[in-house]
Amino acid sequence: MTDGFDLLIRAARVIFPNEELPAAVGVHGGSVTAVMPVDHPATAARVLELDSSVVLMPGLVDSHVHICEPGNTEWEGFATATLAASAGGITTLVDMPLDSVPSTVTVAALDLKREVARGRCYVDVGFWGGVIPGNIRELAPLRRCGVLGFKCFLADSGSDDFPQVSALEMEQALGVLRDLGAPLLVHAEDAESAASMPAVHGRHYADYLASRPRGIENLAVCQVIEAARRSGGRAHLVHLSSSDALPMIASARRDGVALTAETCPHYLVLAAEEIADGATACKCSPPVREGANRELLWSGLRDGTLDFVVSDHSPATPDMKETASGDFGAAWGGISSLQLGLPLVWTAARRRGCSLSDVARWMSAGPAWLAGLRKKGRVAVGYDADFCVFAPDESFTVDQRDIRHRHTMTPYTGRELDGVVSATFLRGEPADGNAPRGHLLQPEASGA
Ligand SMILES: [Zn+2]
Image (cartoon, rainbow, N blue to C red; front, side, top):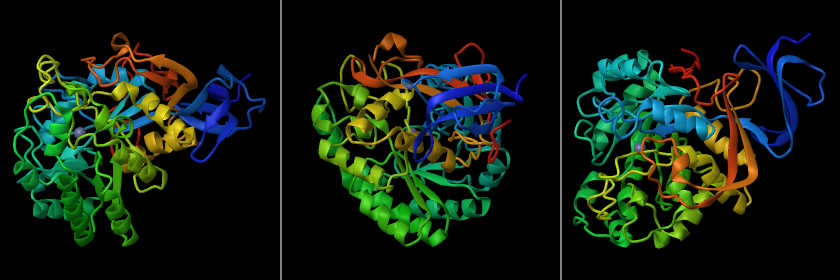
């Protein structure tokens, strides 16, 4: 005799947005249908008992992933990225519109991306569309066809078919997207300032850092704020690195500007002073800055100025990362870390007195909110039964042999981290890499 649940999880520790409590979570048809006292006598076809050595937390939502397929499948692909995600406790990815060929700037390109993704994803996947010069008429059709929002660059993106927009073009796009109810994600570095810096060569990280000073970011953040203010559109700052921008963001929000911001594990974990000569795995743009900057980003996260943390998994081949030369000027700018995000952030967060509820807000609920995924990011009735079972007190050493990305290079090899993902569930079923059951997501729904 069961109570209509397909799965019942009795857990000593369930992570809710503001607290951790024992609970029994009932799942039916892929959704959470009951959250009950842990000793509730309910039964189910399958029962999972979790002791206090692990927590049941919402599956992570990573809204900033470059999957690169089609076109650059030798960098990454839907199967490898989503396998790595499931191994890392992530149950939803949102794919960036560039680094694939074609970029997702037309409906035809979105259709092609869906075609190659269909049947190959081990977790759920949604798509951002791109804003480039001249495609403003594509935005409404792209939204109708299922993109969750849009991304643009204010500086060179590194992809020939994804040119940057001017501040004016960004503002025009924000106006259009306001009426479509979609956010605009902005890579905030100022093109002119970035282009005026002398080219960098060599193996010294300090030289690369000096070529991308905070001012390049600060200036672009100002442009985003004023464009959002004037247009009334919703702007989101991706991968914030400059802590100087935190008071500017807070000030804009006090004025009522619709602005959110994310940062990434590398800005919260790495520090410029500690990056070895030739360690091009650590190159990204905007760059990882000094340890003091890192601590200010943690303050911004704790006080809510920064909304959440996503990977900006931006993979490339070892050749592109110039592993042989270690030349920071020539190396591709992008860090691979998708599978490791949760232990990276948890290890650093617990040392700063933060809780697993904080981490779940930053890595599940926050990104789900940005992407408009109303059934993702929480353990709550009506939400998808997407879970990560996580052993927060176990530790492990990052070993390239365990990495499921297409390329295993990452800045974190050999690092000792706290927290082991022991299981991932997608809509109530184990996401263990045996079957590609991931859905392709549409706005404001989690099924497709
Ligand atoms: Zn990115």
